[in-house]
Image 1 (cartoon, rainbow, N blue to C red):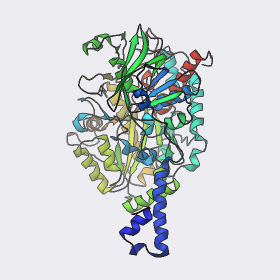
Image 2 (image 1 turned 45 degrees about the vertical axis):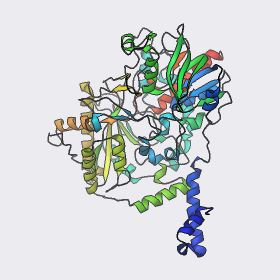
Image 3 (image 1 turned 180 degrees about the vertical axis):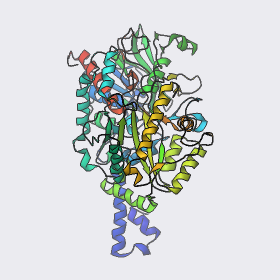
Length: 605
């Protein structure tokens, strides 16, 4: 019987591993295997209390029920459990993320995995035409840490004017000056102070940055985190070469007053005399349970599941709720005001034609396993971003650019990435043909302030809701994206790009018949290639009661209730100008303060 990795390998081919050199080599292999197993060595996920709770025959109640252990919910649960204001139950539909989610470079490989809800949008004649069934994929994290377990780990505050606008809508103390302390608090917790020296440096950072500077954009390097016009390498929520999700940070030292149910799906919230009194849930083993709330229910299920649960509970547009066969309890505009950042790739060739063999990839992976350093400890050049104002009229950007790099004949990353997005086979083939000839720089214009609005609806036959994105329905959205392409053409003319023969390649889309580089070609291209950057917000809008489109107050209470709050990205009245993880965490932190202010008689808001 083999008792170790060394025994196994020696048993398979003993002559090759005889002697001192063979033993040393086998010991090295064993070390690599052990380092892979030790990726979780400094963290253990909190225990699952589901079985204990499900086996109880008496009525179960907690002071606070929190639905969703995602980016916001994990923070709220951890902070509240340590505040000594009562017992807390955190209910999560998923489980613990696996090892793959820990490795930053594997971020695209988490799509369509067991920690991804893998939502599919409704078909549209205006967008997502290059995707299977004309439907884009909205990946959302399912499990401890939620989307912070599968996202790109990019930390951007947004523009200060974004939050001043929220306050101008009647949301008291939601301006940037009021939220600044929450941004600063989480930046301290993520320990961003020494991020720059630890990052793996890719030479393409300097090349692309030089080109943007030729166009007059200031390079902010690591200075600040706001979405200011210019370029920057954004900070990542990583530590020691590994992903940091919010569950790791905020549940690590949670108190004994916190219980957690994993793999448990909340179907609806129960009401009595206008108050939220409990939740109805189902565990993956089939057992159902009702659990009561003595004080409050906090809904942190995200911009898709939060409106879904509210409407299933009778909170939503009255006529629509009743048509779905659900008793209407509170008539609110739930599910509307849905907004999302969309982006699309422009592929540029270079004259470098660099390749990366599987042998080198394997060596780099071993380097990562042994030292947590090198390319696998980062996300390539995706953390290099540029912000512009396409109109040249303001100091607030309306376009953000992300960047990627694929070596020539990339067989490791490119195809799995495109398949994860669910591009049609002919689109993937066309991109691969370009990659067979060239290494590719991807530049991705991202629309920061779309005017189009979508909605979340319930499905009668499926567990997942209906997502109507309504991408590009407002003509201004297309016009802004066309201007964004013109900026990339200006990049083509810079010395930095010309020296490497960089230019946008003609991607041949069978259903786009217009000549390359014409306005009609680019409009067709955008309608086929544009997709989500996974930033849906707004489906349970925060606003004063007089605003008929709002769902929650500036205290995050669902209008018409006294003890049901929403604390996640769905409450955002409008999209911030940047990646949405940082503002989502700010909402969670302010939400905790609002709750503590009520139950601990504090006055710190």
